[in-house]
Length: 489
Image (cartoon, rainbow, N blue to C red; front, top):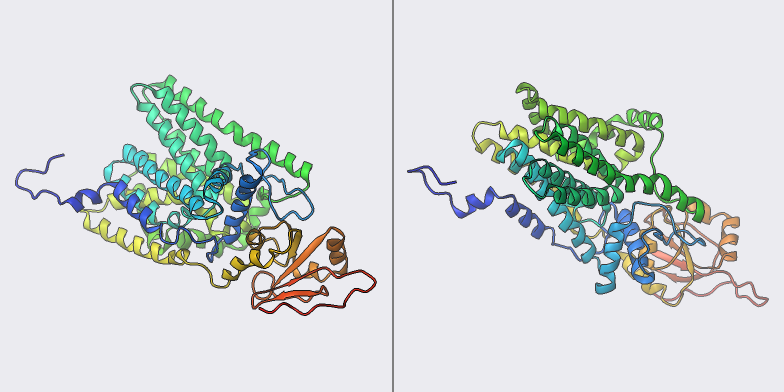
């Protein structure tokens, strides 16, 4: 579009600032800082290492999508039900080429998360205009999405695939040709996203609003059928195959949710922490205020389309919350499926402000607060850094090990071993220690200040460090020594 006659031509930066691809690329480059860091950030190192654990097993033993394997199942095989391991398999293939470096895994999620923002912008711009599309996409970019799109977790990966799928389905509604091909692309992306994280499916609640009163009614029903077919693999995986794996291999790992009544009681009992996920974690305080501004503007202007979409998306996300219960407010990433909804309303509200200066100023405030609050994601937690030495300290042993990390798999991943993750109470139980010895446990790692904290066990000491101790099984021979002197640090 040409500038009006007599008005100054926009500068290069002004043109770039209106292009979402520029901001996505800039955010991409910023998040390359520390991209090679091991997954030992303050938040959700355990979730990342559980993904990497399965991926490393794929790299070492071959990719079997139907039988993902954990290392924390003790004497069992470790095969268990979990999210469909598409992300794990991609990372496993990267490990075959680049080794166990973390940067390819982070890069896979970052690339998909960036593409998700671009497609989110395309969908919103097509439906609500250029300004709303740009503002909504920028809000999404600096939200909790900013941090979790560089973590080795399936959440942003899956949400991005679902957003791409919905955007392709919406594009097929108005495409003059090749709409079947566009729909098939949407179906593949949607199926992959739902398999990777089923809670991402709550975004599908927007489809009735997108499909309402389309000119080509037959095409609309055909595309809706494509969408319905794309949900079948996820239904089979989570409701048939995951229970089958758990029953067959005897190891429970994946959280399948709670009864809705139980979840409702837990959320109401902890309602301040539940609300905290929305006004603090999702978009921070300024972003939550912009979201409320957008909701107010939509009601004042009687924007029934966006209000209908909002209510449908709220209803579908409420199901996710109720099934999660306490897990929802304990883990911030559970609010991620609702962040695009908040960004959508926020972008609509900013677009209603007179002039662009107010919108720009508010966007700057939201971006500064959001990114500053997530800056700790770029550095390693110093209390966890000693885990990087653990594999080297166990190099003389290839057996199964036990450690006092509760249900956290992080240390087992960095030990590069299989075994048992136990509580301090379990390690103090003579029956448990006897069973570990009988099952061939060759080492017990006791962490002093992280995870469960220090605990005394009667096994002989092999190695003592500031962060942990390593014990070996007692020698049951006739002339067995009472103990050994620890190796010097």
